[in-house]
Image (cartoon, rainbow, N blue to C red):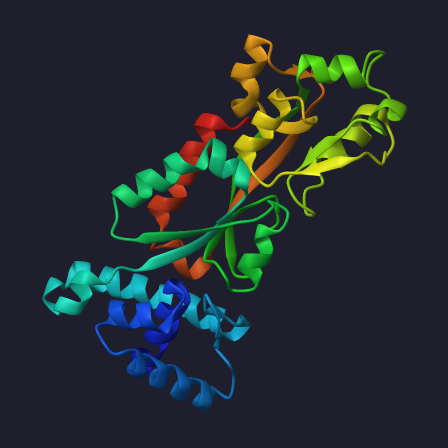
Length: 299
């Protein structure tokens, strides 16, 4: 049988990042939390928490944390049906759900879904940011319970909901375009025109270039891991980049940004994948995600 007091201790250490903060949340001493975690690790023969600042879960620890999320959802539903089971401790403790989403979705359309769900439920949310091509890895590794991803095929043990496409335009300031592309966007011109890249996982600029000039091109790039700063940097003339149309459209209308190749858009299809064990408990969450996507993404 699972020692749930120890499993909760592991989950809380991972959630708060320290044994001291976990102890405060669980109303016990740090030594009690440490002993519970140690005993469970010794019993299982694996390390569940990588000690550090902050403390983080190992792969085995992540799976245990996801299990505790499922247990928390089940207890939440049971207490809703049988409120007499509620204890003073359960009145103050709320279940935290871990999800993964790409930065551009969070910056453009996903927050309304978060707000609608959070305001209508007792759940707390822990949002991890990663590239849409890689958020599926968080699901497969047991690190999150749901994710916005570019993977259309259902992951093992998951239910998938198509959301629509987030559309991007390759934009830059008029001065930048005049400087680097006086004769239009060509492969040769791109080789000397600095781009903006979110991080090493970001391949959208490469994909757009192949689409625009028909072949891959090596180009210099600035690294800037922020959706809004991407737009600001484009306006400031630092480089060209693929910006979500919803973020760039006001600047485009005002003439502060122009498309490198008018009408040459890049559409990224997105999907909501959620662990099947959580699906029935989080139907409203999925509904709010689908509703927000329908209102703001291209079909």
